[in-house]
Image (cartoon, rainbow, N blue to C red):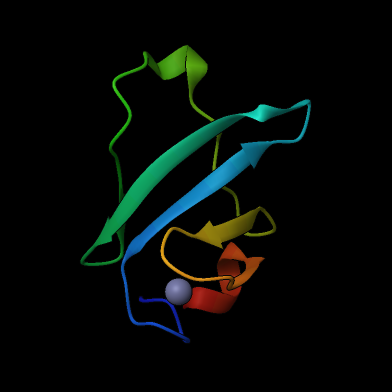
Length: 67
Ligand SMILES: [Zn+2]
């Protein structure tokens, strides 16, 4: 599971309620590893239909398309 454009495994998601609240994560062996130091309640949940954004390039799409 990597970015189809640049190959990184580093992504972020935006809170649908608050576009300034983002959660960064790495995909390690297909598993989400959050990199932000915030507590669980601050994290944006990543679901199959969640829009995910690449940390390194302009790619973004639903999480399920990464699989
Ligand atoms: Zn990318």
